[in-house]
Image 1 (cartoon, rainbow, N blue to C red):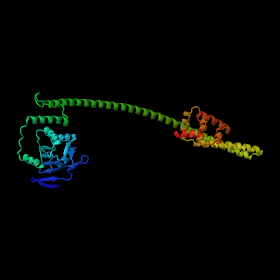
Image 2: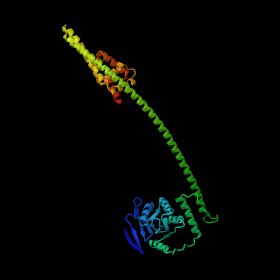
Image 3: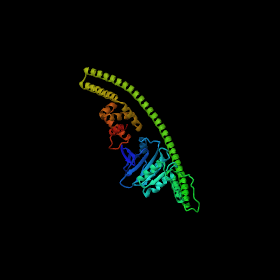
Image 4: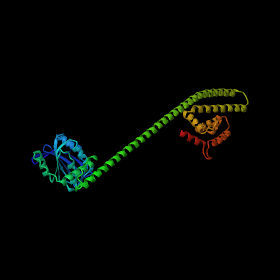
Length: 404
């Protein structure tokens, strides 16, 4: 805290009693003079526009000086202030009519001509319990406060008719602009009065602003109704989509249940087939052993053993195929059948073998046909699948499996 003396009054100022507005190019400072005088000023290198009131900072100063809720005097240094924003005007009027703090006297000094009309408008709308003065310098402002504090309040000279008309005119304008008061009764001077046209203009503007306010309220109400309707439509659409999603979920769950049941049946069939293949393979191996033991023509024995070995190999392929049949293979067969219902059971089986990378000889042996017969079947399948001349069945089925 810094401390100095002016006119035998101590001056207190803290480092954080300031706010910087870089965009507007100024820094606002507060300090306390004596017991209950708050001083506000701006630091700038050029003329600026006051952008905001900094009410929070003002409250901090009052709190830290013990003046919250106490009657105070306020000095406003308007050096380098060339304009005041609408936001600032609204903020300062709210502060004045908030009854906290209680301003006993407000003194503006170093007011430039370009903002004097704003200061006069401000003075015209303050509560009757407050008094506003405009002085030329800091010294005069402080002197006015001390006179007021000592009870030697300067008497206000009687207003001339022109001054009264100007004050009323500025007050009506300020209340409409800063307080949005469009229903206040406007006292209009007589028709012969010089200021009659000005107040009639104010009255007409008040009526227009009132109508514009009604239009704005109607527009806002229409916007509200439109958005409520949009929200209602969106909710209806969302609920419909939720119901559709629930239906799709139920369909998927049903399809999954059907697939699981089908897989369970196929597992049972796989067990049965595997058992049968194992029994057939065992029987073929016993028969092969018996043929080896026969004392017959060697060429005839070779033909018989070759036939047995071929059957054993076929059964081995069949067993391996059934063991390798997975859930994804079952899903693939189901989807393939839906996409190409013209394929028969043998062609579906051959399609699966092709997808599983069995060669033509193994597939033919598993199907119990010759290699040439297998080529004929693949030719017919090529047409049933709707493939082009240079398209591969294996590539098509692999791509189809990848989609699933």
